[in-house]
Image 1: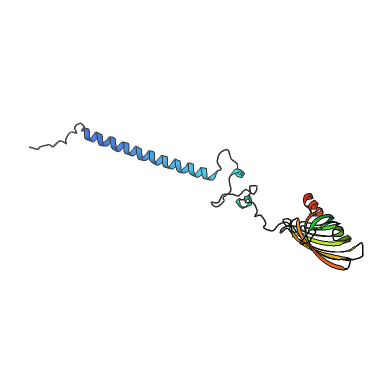
Image 2: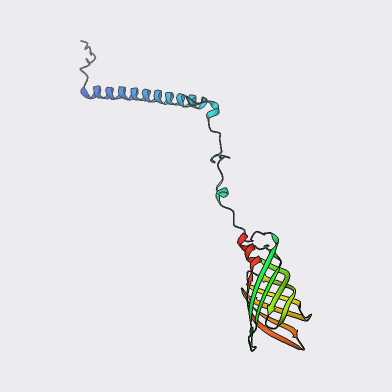
Length: 226
């Protein structure tokens, strides 16, 4: 008697098998979607690199500067904005010859009685402004003098003065109305000077020291005009 073995009849699928099949199908779809996204992104990037940006021309794109900022020649550089250093040397000025007038008033020292002195000089003054801060003056001219020592004297006088130090010095010589020689030397500071004068009065030779106030009108006028 033969026995026939019949194949097992498949039963209904279990819940776990259906769950595994759903997960496998979802994973496959996810992999396919990822591949499509990656392919689309690569294609778009390649097209962007091959063509200029939308709305711009080839000439509008900035040149490749190698990582350095471009320099606009119309904009001054930082070094150009720094003011130049002030020169330490004063500018040179002119050398002028101008008319001169000088007045001197003095009083003798150490003599009894005291003697007065008055002198007017007219001529020219050389104003050397090579250094504008410290001009130098040289004056020369003819003078007329009255004093208590004797007759009036007419002669010539030369004088120098430095505005920087305020020092002055001068020499003069003349002939009085009696034909006698009279000489003098002066030295001083600012408007004040001392003068040593030697002259012959009658049969005597006399020397006197005068304290004087001087007014160099020519030099003062030049300074005011500057």
